[in-house]
Length: 184
Image 1 (cartoon, helix red, strand yellow):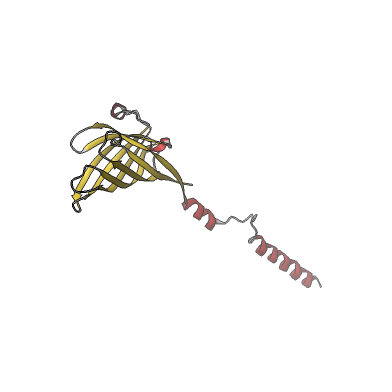
Image 2 (cartoon, one colour):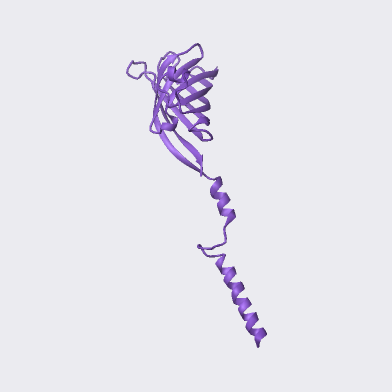
């Protein structure tokens, strides 16, 4: 009789352990789900306007990126690494960019007055409305990594768009949008 009671208690204890692993409030850690959560990235959307500051030389242009996220706002240096005609109205553009987070001027960058730094590579297309036209549209996509300060280790994607209709009002302004990803 004692053996039957002992077997019954062991069976109940075994079932309790088995079912406790199935409940949401289990005391046994679920390391597989913890690893999945740790590897997921949380994206944060941003948008803004990028305006020219200074032409620093033949292939370097500085801009000010003003966005609704301070982690991608600051002075940016743009370097063209390739300019290739595709056809009569389209040019492929490639390059690199550094964004100095928190800098307001080129002097801030020179003096180290910034709180973070991004390195970006980008590729885009400049398309004229006709071979004779000065009206064009540029769309460029970039990917970058935070390499210093407050953005160290973050990754981001950008899309820059410029519609230039030849009038001073349209100006050389890029509209930007993108997302920043960070580890959980």
